Length: 188
Length: 175
Image (cartoon, rainbow over all chains, first blue to last red; front, top):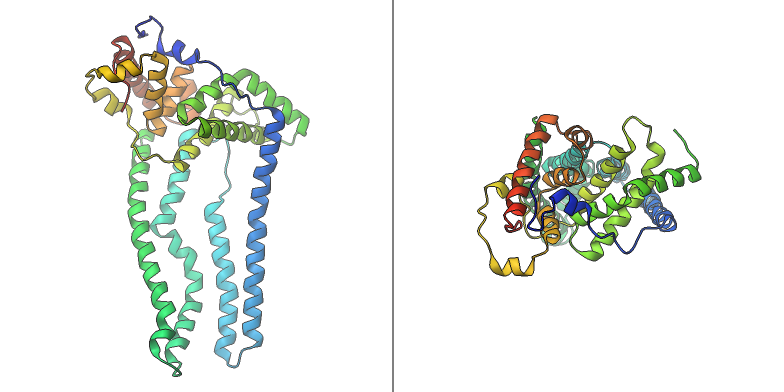
């Protein structure tokens, strides 16, 4: 085994480090675990509240509708938003084994990131597309007022979509490189 | 398997008694910043405590503890990505070993050089280096990481070469 100038091998050097001065106590671990659990519980609550809001808005549109297309919009909005929440939740919080082999853990994280960046984000947004298209159609076909103010929100939305697509492509390339490196180690 | 809170605590305390110092060193190998290191250490301990009810004895407690700790630390590294790039063992092996007197003066301490060398490595190489330094054998490292024994053996060979050059000859640390 190689030795340092003082004659100690790297393993001994490494294992001989001074212990940390701030040990983690069991009480501290309990507190931290409670905090983590609170955060975990908060997310389904936040999703539930958002779905309630979507349901309320869809209900308002339904009962205030003066033509069948508006009622269709309300239904599509409720279904689309619920589906988007469900897809995002599944993407962000997949079931996970805390002690799976390190390489598998790293790979699943990178793979999840890659599929999201390669197009998963589009799938998550897709259920909302029918509502957006109908709203866009109504805005364009509405003959009151000037056209530009009516379609401006959709133009901004389109630009944001293009920006997001380009950004995701660049990030997907970086993630793919990391994944290929890991796969080379795993001899895949 | 469902176990009571006190059983979970007992298992946790047993694991920390056996591997606590190794977890400290692992956190040091992953995080140079003292505040972030404290956070990482707490995250590792919390993840370990939370994971223990799922421990079913299919692997050894040592493998379990190292897997949970390395997985938590890898997430930490991916979350707190630094501006500088990490280097791989191959690059370290190929890098020139020119002395930098100023750097050597500042970093005479071999331990510090070793810690810096570990912290500069890419996550996968770092895991292998850390487990090697903790004196796990090839089978043990393969078990924790999931890499094949052949890959681990090749990497360990490189690790030994890098450490030999840097610690036998008193060379530079990784940049």
